[in-house]
Image 1 (tube, one colour):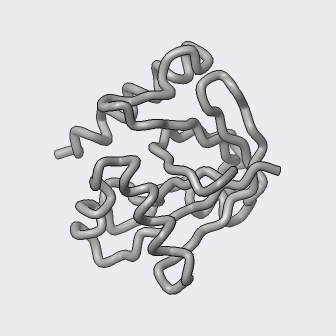
Image 2: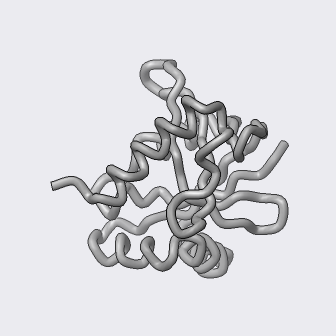
Length: 142
């Protein structure tokens, strides 16, 4: 059975995309969300993912949680292969550089806490569902 939050996020993404960002920046309970635009590392095709984000200064923080699944989301290897990508916050598009930050990085806990707070603790629950260490991805404007 699909995680209801993931199902909600997919419906939310459709609204975000179809309205050009006029609707969709805030998810239920005021959680901020962005659209991440990547290029498929194998297909070369454009990909879009709606993700809840936190902030670290000028940078945006997302997690590669995939709802706590054993495998990371498809967008993670895409940004690792091509870190120059783009995000959309509301109607504004921002070119960014993506950096995956794992639990062995001294910055991890601070960044994890920030993005987990933005998602009302849901990422901690996802981490409990998998042995895979879920990374934080820092999206820094270029």
